Image 1 (cartoon, rainbow, N blue to C red):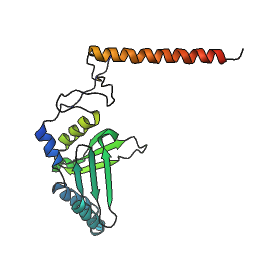
Image 2: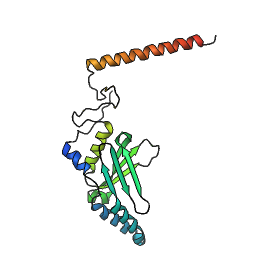
Image 3: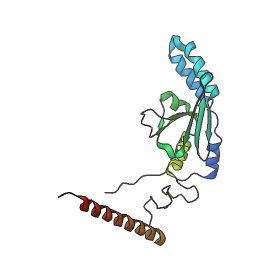
Amino acid sequence: MTSTSVSPPPLSPPAVSSIFAIERPHPKLWTYYLLCCLATGPLFPILLLPHWFRYRTMRFRFDNEGISMRWGILFRREVLLNYARIQDIHLVSNVVERWLGLARIQIQTASGSSAPEMTIEGVMEFEEVRDFLYSRMRGISEKTGRSEVRTGAGIPTDGGVFSKSEAAELAVALQAVTSELKAIRETLEKTRLP
């Protein structure tokens, strides 16, 4: 039994440029924050101010290397995340967010924490951003649509057939590993005490 993973199709250059153009959250995020603050009742005035500052200062930047997100007035916070560090991506939305057409994109890394490293909120194109992040995370080339390991060997990981030069290179490397393991085993057997 073999398992197959479903990869999103490569994004077209206009889709990538539209994602690179995202810098601020959509105004519907402020509507969402306002509704959340109203739901708290008497705490409304206390919670409104921090949410207003978060909405007004939140900035995103997508580029070829990674994502950055920053916000805050008194306590400025900035999160920089390279695509190579991304381990998992989740889309999360509650009833109000779905009604407004919003979702939160939670990005997790191998940091050991169960909380997401970054949560992008207030983006209307959340599915396109998720697909973009998956394609960058897995190293899918936008030109070929083929996934490859990010090592010098260039061995395909998508179940493709090796070319003759790749197969020969792999055979040489495996023979070197085999001979090295034999030498280590022989050395260990010689040094073993009776």
